[in-house]
Amino acid sequence: MTTLHAQCDSDTMPFVREFVRDPFGVASVVPSGGALARRVTAPVAASGEPVVVELGPGTGAFTRSIQAALGGRGRHVALEVNTQFTGLLAARFPGVDVVGADARNLVEVLGGLGIKRADVVVSGLPWAAFRPARQTEILGAIAGALRPEGAFTTFAYVHARWSGPARRFRRLLDTRFEEVVVGRTVWANLPPALVYHCRRPR
Ligand SMILES: C[S@@+](CC[C@H](N)C(=O)[O-])C[C@H]1O[C@@H](n2cnc3c(N)ncnc32)[C@H](O)[C@@H]1O
Image 1: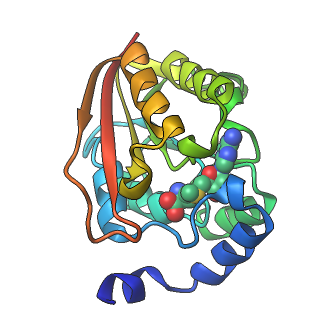
Image 2 (image 1 turned 90 degrees about the vertical axis):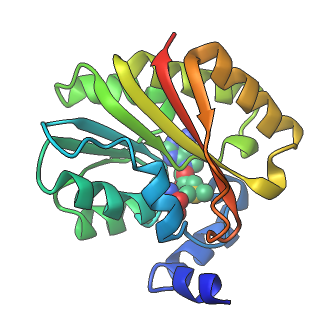
């Protein structure tokens, strides 16, 4: 009940509305909670000028955490297909380059912003809702956009972890990254989720 209460804030209504309108695109009824956001955004370096890319930011659950970690340093680029969410994010996070684009166009979007490679890519994308070809295409774009020593993090809901698309995505991670570490389950999130920490893109 505490988790549910903590995750239901002013972002919940816009999120629920978009979920009802586009259940497969949004793929979650409520935004992620703070505990999951901290785990997913952990690779953002505490020093230097990192380039951080966020895919599928929604109402900004991970965006807030990335902005706090950056504290005005580096670049933060967020790609989101939902125009309700891009408007909300641009108004709320002036320090973020919010781009209304599909994650599969990541390399082109970064090029348009004068960015060659990203240090960190953080995903809020609904991988289990994507067809195989889309999973492959977007993961290829992520691996192509990362620096060789860059990090990619994403999450999966525990209840859907063994579904066909989720298992396929998990196998795909191994083909695209030399190192894939599965973090501990974040039980405090609604629904509970686990984080994949990926390094050394192939
Ligand atoms: C499960 S929600 C996660 C939102 C937020 N990151 C969070 O954790 O609360 C998935 C988000 O990905 C966005 N999305 C879905 N497909 C996308 C794509 N191909 N490119 C960019 N964003 C996409 C949806 O519009 C939605 O905002």
